[in-house]
Image 1 (cartoon, rainbow, N blue to C red):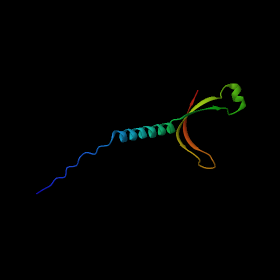
Image 2 (cartoon, helix red, strand yellow):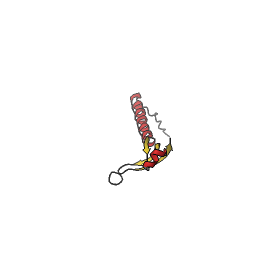
Image 3 (spheres, helix red, strand yellow):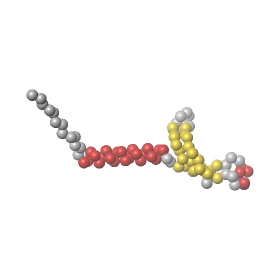
Image 4 (cartoon, rainbow, N blue to C red):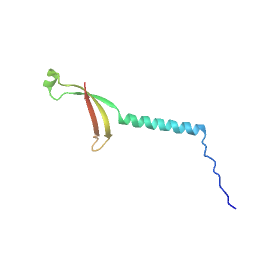
Length: 83
């Protein structure tokens, strides 16, 4: 005599599936915002640059940011686009 155990597929209530989907969406949105925020800075290296027009706005896209490394400083790796 051989007996076979038949397992029923696991089912989850719709409310559980919706909550998990919402949590996954929020985590994905958080990670996306942490990875691709854009900052704009105004760069002036010398007061003569302002008169010559070589200073100006730069858009910075952060690729990596580690906060509070030493003494309140942050470590960032970014790409810069000149406008």
